[in-house]
Amino acid sequence: MNTTTIRRPLLALAAALLAGSLAACGSTPHARSGFIPNSVTLAPAGELVSEWGGKLDPSTVGAVKVAPATTPYSGKYGELDAEQLSEVRVAMSEALTKEFKDMAMKPGGRTIVIHAAITEIKPNQPLRNIAPQTQILKRGYGYATCEIYATDGEGGPIVAALMQSHDTQRLGTEKYSETGTAKRASEDSAKKFRELLFR
Image 1 (tube, rainbow, N blue to C red):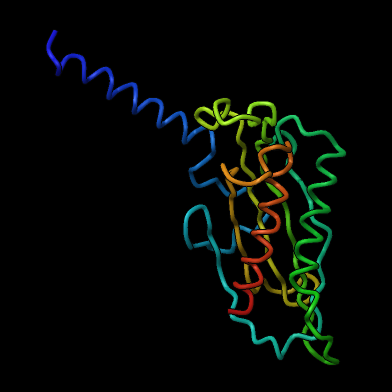
Image 2 (image 1 turned 30 degrees about the vertical axis):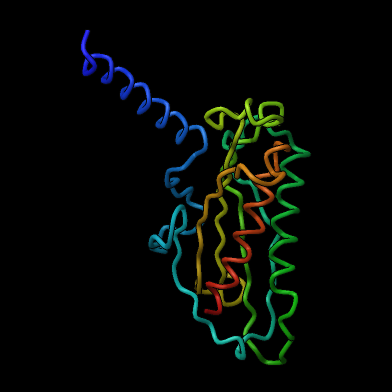
């Protein structure tokens, strides 16, 4: 048996392990759920991020209202129970409220209404993430996808939309909670949406 014969199976094994690693952590673009209306054409804006619109003049905004966040799609949240999903929705609403709390109320200004949903979650498996050697191929890691859009007034035209997925990170504490990545995704998406809306 020559070295070429040995090398080929090893390369095939390495490729299979790499593919399994990527699949385990969700590092591919996620399909739109339909939460953001299909009339909005999202464009890629970085790894696992799509967006549309934005560029509002903050001086024209009289108020920003954050509608309660939702988790609207059954079967898209792994084994999370109702209490855990409630915690995730609260985390998303609080993250958006925090991002826009500095917006001064201006009489006569337009009211921007923000709608948000976490449309998909693969929960972390904390017991697999305790020690470095148990994190092989990131099999205990998860991901979450957030979709956010804003309307000019209640039921008005959409002025900005964002879809972002977030993979569990090796560094940090999010991997030690089933919902940790979803909560981190909420914070990251809220910040990115603020940037999009007023950039």
